Image 1 (spheres, helix red, strand yellow):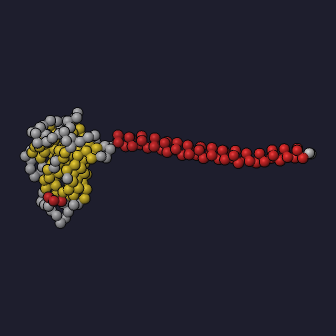
Image 2: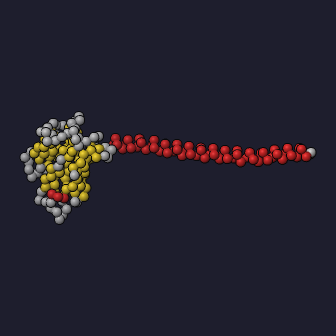
Image 3: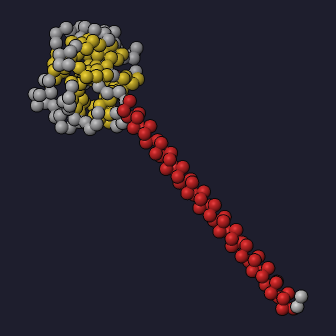
Length: 202
């Protein structure tokens, strides 16, 4: 082999060696890009999968019981409650004379979120709690009442259609050392099917 042939052969090998890392780097970069793309796709798939689960949970969230006008609902402790287009009616075991809270007398602004509460206790420290809720956004789902004895979970009633108001009720007990203490009651919160505050009484 002549000196010129040896020089050309050596040059070809050098070119091949210099080119090899470039090819390897390109392949490596390709794998990294592919991995990044796969990771992003996985995040997108997870987000897409979570959305229907959240929507399904919202659909399964409890809503108010729909009652007919004048339909009496019995409450533990002997109370009864019913709704008409004019408002909320109720009686208790201690007072069978019907009481009434109007939604049409101008004292309730149904265009703004609000909650009212009536609390009637007995000598044993039991309280029948009830009130109106109205004006919130979304669909009312649940109600809680904060008390010194803990959180009380109540129930919701509404007339058919979209009257823009409903009635909540619950029963509670004062702590053993606080019988007859009306200050044991705290916030009343009505939440919608997505867990957001529909209306609140502080």
